[in-house]
Image 1 (cartoon, rainbow, N blue to C red):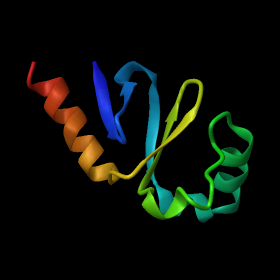
Image 2 (spheres, rainbow, N blue to C red; image 1 turned 135 degrees about the vertical axis):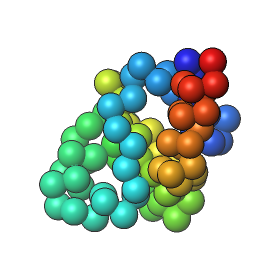
Image 3 (cartoon, helix red, strand yellow; image 1 turned 135 degrees about the horizontal axis):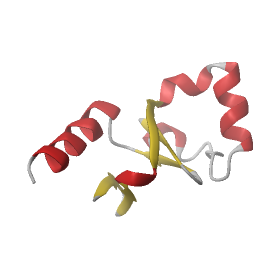
Length: 81
């Protein structure tokens, strides 16, 4: 199954390691992780529109959708069939 994360992008549920509020990127360790992980860099132009960073097996994706809403979408997909 796939999760629509906004901006016409989808991520496989099997690839998702974690979803985090974008405010957590201000932590020094998270900042270092995001700077060094493929796809982890976020431009200053994108930052205001992002609410979530999603860590997958091979990249980091950014989403304008809140982590709570994304979790609700996952629950709806997984438990509805």
